[in-house]
Image 1 (spheres, helix red, strand yellow):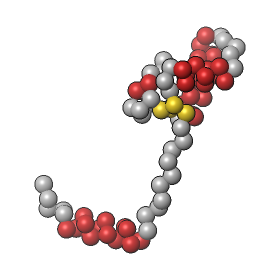
Image 2 (image 1 turned 180 degrees about the vertical axis):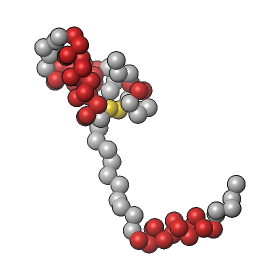
Image 3 (image 1 turned 30 degrees about the vertical axis):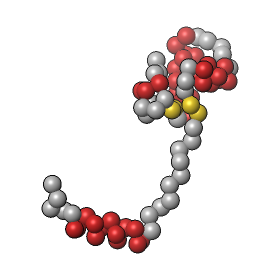
Length: 77
């Protein structure tokens, strides 16, 4: 069974994770329940339906700055 903190530590689940969990639930229990009912119940239990934040790709300038920083700090403990 899925718990709030088993997915990513913040009570958030991915769509694929919910889909797999839903299929297992229906198969194991021989249930005929709408996915909307399951989604609504998960929300009541404190789960959040979120999408990952988009992050911009690193520019060449950023990559070079990272390399320079790594070179300067390679002997740090």
